[in-house]
Length: 112
Length: 115
Image 1 (cartoon, each protein chain N blue to C red):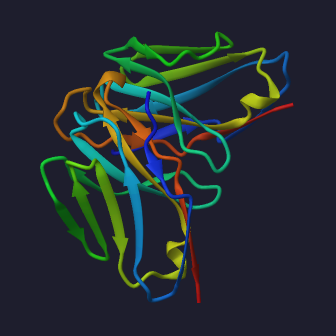
Image 2: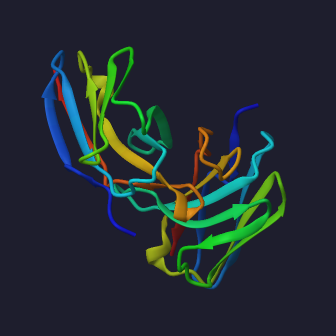
């Protein structure tokens, strides 16, 4: 299938906002997800958004969805060193049994 | 119980060994998935089971053989693996394969090393 695209690296200072971008491919995806993975750990679901929504806010996290451009972003406010991890966006692909198709991941590095 | 368990956590095997990975969930989920994740790469879909039947095989080599003996269990049988098969193997389950929101729950994974 086609790739879900993400920028590979993002470096920010503690306290700043981080914005991670993603372009997905399947316009029939009903949900889009953001997962966090710390080194050596499993996947942690951060948040998700229904495809008919434009925005979803959950504490420090804001998800923006532009369905026309198939563009998804995750904003982390007041980024902390504990936010350093790889962030994957994912779409549920109906043709794949609604399995998740992941982007390549963005490595977020937060410096103090 | 909203947990997917996987055993073993770590596995080291030789290229001539036969081993199995096990995944279990007791949430009544009828869709179960195997993903493979290489270091610093995204998880890649391997297999999808829906109502205990294999519905999707993403062109996975036959040295990987999935099995779903019942609605709670998913196995991945390994035979004659190659060193490049070393990876984190993730199992996931979901309430159904439908379009309504059902969270896909991931297990912690089995970290496999093939010598």
